[in-house]
Length: 640
Image (tube, rainbow, N blue to C red):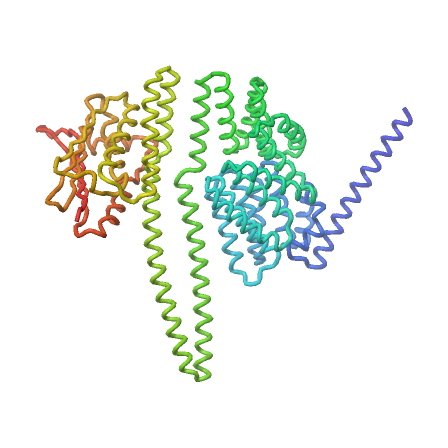
């Protein structure tokens, strides 16, 4: 007993001695920072890097720096505290710490710590799946860093982080090639400044993009490169992330035992780390692997555990993954009702994360930044040319000055001419892509496939095969249309018949539609913009006929007017535009359509090459008692 007491006393003495030594060392190192007036991240981090992994030490750092009113030290420590909070999934606390750091950095005019703080806030918002706010902060960091003429190591590191953040946002919005370009830009800087951690992160992110493109072997190569660096620098979190990604690849390659070995090693480590984001994903991967092994009960328990953590910490991407895995699990045990339920939930959340408005916002902001960057370079070049011109005038070399001025003027005129052409071409391409992409409405595709799936579930094989053939033909035609700006009238009519046929599934084939074509009209040779009629048909169905109980009709008429115009009439016997607008106003979720405006823009561009202009008329139809009886749309498309 005496021996045990002696041992415990000795053990406690050692602990207290180490604790006192630790405090003494921290205080000592803080003094070194303050006395030497260290003001860059690299120099401060060199003295304090051993203490930043412990939250209590970081809080003590802040207290000691505040005592001496050493503001740059407070900025450093607040950012380190924010990173710790982020790793524990305490996102609001993390944001608060980084914003405190940013405020102080602005006060002392430290550009390096402003860039660093902005990037860190962006990373937290990205982890919370708030991509717009994340991009705003990353973009602000990049713009601030670009203004610095001779960036130090910290600023260069900030630029690399900003590019990495942009890449991650592209990755989450499924723009994989653009994401890879951003990661490669970040890697170039990380190699230049010899930052191994940054290199490891970018290798890992490129691996994510490759895996999403189903380039499994390439993805595995990048994950292994990242793991090798993380082992070299002894980065525990990095090793967890890499092993998790490699395990996921093993699952896809049906090497379940290898995957489970890595996952089971990872789980206790990630639990100990307190990082809820990766803890959630580890449990989800474990459940997914168990599904593949047909251990469905265990799989369900682990996936639901992962889902509970994701919901508690509002991790949207993890929640979406959990729903997807649950859908696959229940499908494996023939519980089609639950499978469909979780499939819908997964898709809804995925659409929320990567919706079109997010994509437009991200692209718009990045294009704006790139444009401003180019304009800045042009202004800088113009300024340098002006200096050269003044020197030439000063030296009275008027001949050379005149030639230089003329050359510069010619270059500028050519540039503006070329820029105008490129802008027009870019606008047209963007317009065509946006218009054609709107035909591939994800809700339409999901609803069509869901209807076909219900036929399969109800064992209506003939209907399922029939509509699946129709759906595949329509998709082929839409994909084919994306390659061509114009199509023949007969192709457009066939495509619209397929579209109406598939939409009619949702209405239990209650819509009667007909196509009336003038015999004198050569539908094989007349060309019009591809998929130009779809938005009008969609409006007729969903705004005109969907609220009507029975007797639903759509009539399309095609004729020629004096060899100058193709006249297309789309007439429905729906509830009319006024009643449709009233119903829409009462809806909680209002669906804004941009299809008609895009169609007008495309017809305007199409008509540039014709003598006559296009016209679109909307006519409200009424009976003798002035009761609405439908809507007629008349399109006049020039022929000569």
